[in-house]
Length: 125
Image (cartoon, rainbow, N blue to C red; front, top):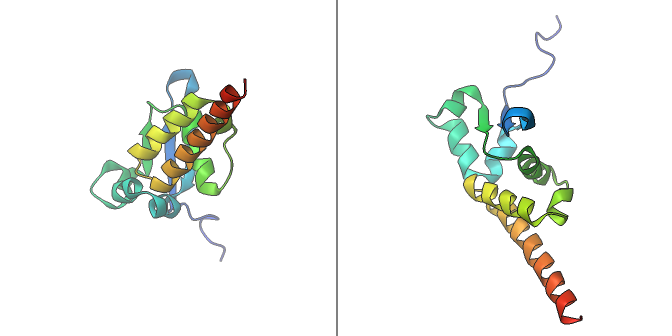
């Protein structure tokens, strides 16, 4: 007899980011989220609504910022981090909020490198 469900979605966590016309939905692997983040671990295994729903509503977070976090989790590069200081700062705030120290460290390093490059550019002119 074939399996009832083709895929096991029990570890899938969903996200909504943004509001109105900018609202976007994302899905990600729960155990991976919990491995790096005490926040996600608590929310998915404690006495919180997210434990039951496996859904996080980040209406106050831009979809590109949430996508940046999920890209980092996968080891992918977020192109906006190299182009937009505001985006990187917002992603750093999300890293603090979700208690993901390695993601925050990665972003702080990007900010420092960009600042030092700008400083070098100013000193040579």
